[in-house]
View 1 (cartoon, rainbow, N blue to C red):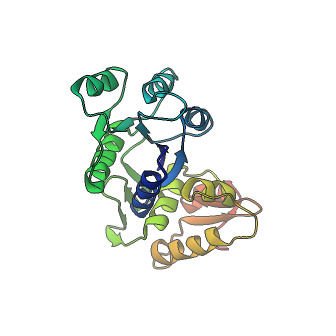
View 2: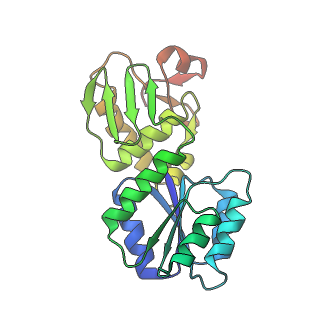
Length: 234
């Protein structure tokens, strides 16, 4: 899942980014309102964390523009303004939650997870064959056997399962899971796919992760994957 942080204070940016990435989320950061609007128009976010005091515009104006879109993600306002009127105005303009600074990260993370549960446009539980992924509890099972995954492994698997049967390039995977551009040289995706295969495929005769020649990877049952000219191993 991808989260946009709209915050001009570098210290808070870094604090939130590190914490959310450690929890397994992909994170983008905008330091001003105009950048935030550009990112919202070009990228699909699952959640936006929005500071009200931005250098170029008021955060409430950014919120209005986000809400004027045909579809928009949940918005958590993060602000030093703790007056009741400010909270009410933010909620009336379409914010889903309001957290005042200073705050404990554990509380912010709990609110993020609650908003993602409420605003989730796709199922909270993904199932492909005997492979199941619980998006909220962040649990994975295969044939009812628990599979322990690192945060980035979980994010890649979730992305593959949400796009079942769709070949995903290494570029797409890197840009969705990591906050970096794919430079054509890194083998980071291949390394993580090997890790995933060792945990969700190697023990079972039916393989789920397939290499799509010249493109990248795809997750599906073998009979469906065969229609996309995929190979079970790289």
